[in-house]
View 1 (cartoon, rainbow, N blue to C red):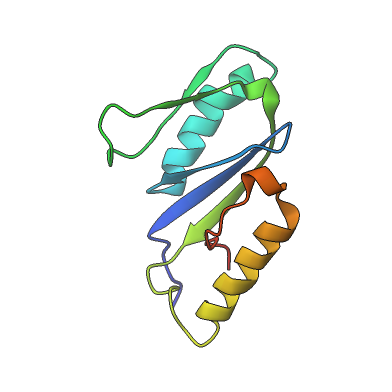
View 2 (tube, rainbow, N blue to C red; view 1 turned 90 degrees about the vertical axis):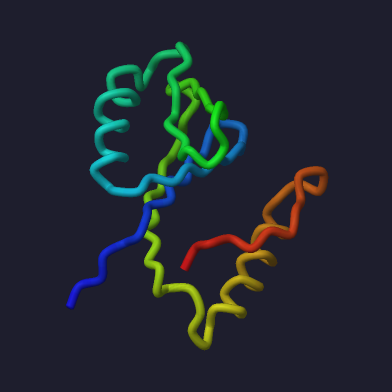
Length: 114
């Protein structure tokens, strides 16, 4: 039986190394934004709006599509949290983040990557 993701985390990497992540509830929502908003202006320096969940009303994010270097789509399964390796995975992720992040930008946040 195939599992269905409960949400999708979209990791965006910008030139200069800045990273942002946005959550979409379905892959279709992401595809609609990607093909309708991002791709038509992929080489543009004009700002476009990135949809954010309604967790914080009034909050929004805009990006310059020409500065976007990479996108990673990560499905999240509500049952994927936990298991025998969950703690180790979070610790390794934090270690990797500390090692690869410049000192002034370091934070000890566990990443969600599997």
